[in-house]
Image 1: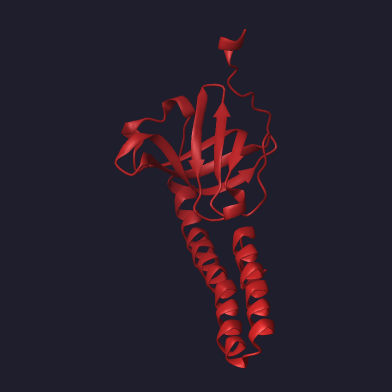
Image 2: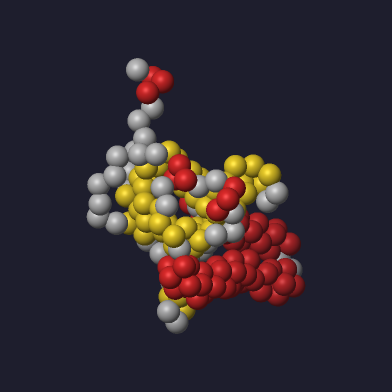
Length: 176
């Protein structure tokens, strides 16, 4: 769904919750026959759908607003170069998506690799285009710690997009 210039997506989990409670509401109404259940239940179902849409709209519009700033300030780096000295600095990497997690929650994480290493890329909203394993991507974001204060550096992604470039991922030599 598109609201203005913002492409809004609702997660499968949010839709499943609405469907579950719609079935539950229907069952409750059919067993009791009380119209007050519908009087309160239908607006609650609508809110269960509208709230995730609103939250996604807000996060998408924020990401859309800050993307040009990050694009202008981001420094091109190789994954191996990302360490604690780059914390809170915008970076741009290119690599191959080796894994993707949590796409169904609209909070995807990607494991992106280039010839020098691999890094976790976290995004707190849905990307503009569908990213899958094997896609060659350009990631723009800020280097942060995995667990707020501790952990290895990861990228808080602002923009991830497919590019038409061939990049070979780091080969695991321990299996040979």
